[in-house]
Length: 166
Length: 166
Image (cartoon, rainbow over all chains, first blue to last red):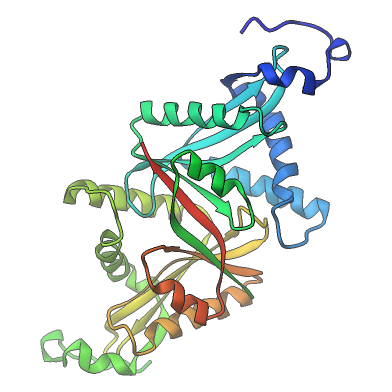
């Protein structure tokens, strides 16, 4: 990618460089990925947990998810190699159609609206297709407008997740 | 349960005895549970697989699901101990709220409409509550009328599963 090497305090602010992002393999950015995901995921929780319990449970969930299937990460980075967003996709046999499927756990971007999410999704789908996958699945919370964004990308509603508090 | 011991060819047909079902621990009925589930699950798949591929992929999915979380099975049986239906529930840290949650993989009954499903669900919820669970979650296909049944049991829509064929 020809990343420019500078000290971080000499670099322009992220918002100035985010527009010229590139998509790269994400395995070297796992710390940034999960740090950012942990922060964003908390905004979707409906049940209150203190910081310590949330961090512990978050870590346990991630370890459990990583234990099954084949995982792939892509990141969007600026020209200095700085993290701007990521997609986390997992290949596994689907629990309903019983075919090899790609499940998208996350697509997140620090700068919405400039095409980072679209580029990440496109790369994830290309990768999944090259791996022989038949379909891509994901879950969207009902109060999350991301479902409209996914519809524009060709995704359709397949099932509903229902819950009951005990 | 005071099960009556008779040879199977001396027993009345299942449909005559199903009305007096009881709920029992399901661990001794794993073969009947997965045999029945494999048959029913195939009716929900949208992608065509031949019998061999379906069986192999079904088996792989079940092994992957059993590898994470704490699993519990309950069965409904008639007075001769014959399988009538089951519920499969799994305790794990939820991927969205990050609390201990019960996930219901299946509720299935050979004889709908006589209360077997309701009794299985009730037992599963009681067990989950006793295990310290905060909520019960499950997935319902959009073309499955079970969502109405779950609504009557107090379940509410939380998220949508979206898919895109590749």
